[in-house]
Length: 245
Image 1 (cartoon, rainbow, N blue to C red):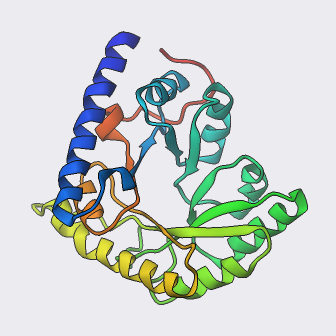
Image 2 (cartoon, helix red, strand yellow):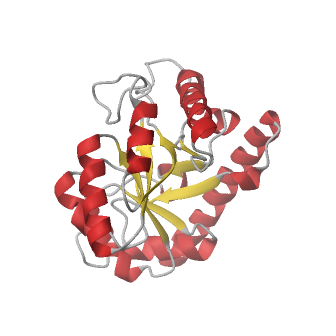
């Protein structure tokens, strides 16, 4: 498929995603513009990332620190999000690059980020990831520990907690993805509301992906993370530093 065809497909898919968001927002009495689309570009080359930015998807998300670092110089106009789990030894690689971290889920990681950010004199923005479904296959702190972790991270130097993030359990066979995810998204929204009573800056809800974004939007998502719904099937593995057109 040519680069032109790719851009045409991306434009069509983006219109579809935005139509879905608009319909769900209307159902919930929300403004569609209050929901930010994060294009999940993992495994896709920088050319695809640049096409997304040109189409209006300026927020891009990566799972792996190394893949993000490799792509970042090639896509200067993107606003980057790291949406995957983050290891403590990668804290040094993310500080100072204006990336929003979605996967902060434990005190030891908070401490590592705070130390690195303070040493660099650079404010680090983050979301607290919550394992709302208590799924052993998912990262995230427990629902019980979420508010304590928000308070702890907020108290550390050079960190700004902007909201919460979750990935619900895999949809059971035969069940609609939106129906399965909706109660988990409602739980995260309730936690965010409780956090905002103490910390008004904890605003964002990063939840919902290609299959279940309607449920996320109706439950208050401010960010939805869309990969296959925008870019089609993923590549065979991480992009490793060479343009594939």
